[in-house]
Length: 248
Image (cartoon, rainbow, N blue to C red):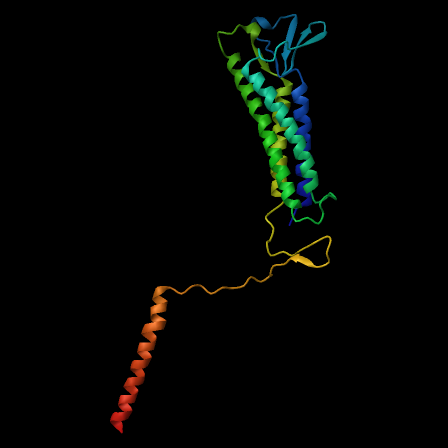
C-alpha cells in the first residue's frame, strides 16, 4: 500500500533541499573573516564563495569580484564547484521524475511502474543530497584545519559562513526526502491483477492462492516406501498363508 502522505512529505522536503542547494551554490559567503586576536579591529571583512569574493568595509559598502581564474583556486573550492552544480542538476531531475511517480499526480495512472518511478526519484534525491554533503564536509574540514593552524596569520583565518550551513541543511533535507519517497512504496504483491488501460480484460493475472507443490521425497523415504514396506507386507502375507496351510 502506497502512502500518499509520506510521498508528499518526502517530495516537499526534497524540493526544499533543491532550492536551498541552488541558493547556497550562488551565495558568496561560504567562508568569512574570523575576527580573532588582532583581527578584531579591522576596517574590511572578506567573504569567499564558490564563484566570487566580497569585501565589506566598515561603512557597510560591499564590493564583490568574480574570481579571475577558476583553475587557480584551492582544491576544496574547485571540487565544491563541480559537485554543487552536479547536485543541482541531479536534484532537479529527481523533482521531475518524482512528480511522475507520485500517486497524487495524473501521470502514468494505470501503469504498474508508477511506484518504481517514485522510488527512482527518491534514490536520485539521495544521490543529489550526497553530492552536496561531500563538498560541505570537505570545506568544514579545511576551514577548521586552517583556523587552528599556527602557521597561518590571524589576518588570513576564516570561519564557516552562512552558505555553508545552508548547504548542509539542504543536503540533509534532500537525503531525508528521498528516503521518505523510497519508503512510501513498499514491494508490491506479485499476485496482484493489473488491467490494461486499452482493454477491458486482465492482461496479467496470477492466482490469489499459490499452488502447493509436493516436496521431493528423500532417498530414505523412497527406500522405505519402495523396499521396506512392500517386503514387510509380502513377509506378513507369506507367514499368514503358511499358518493357514499348517492348520489345514
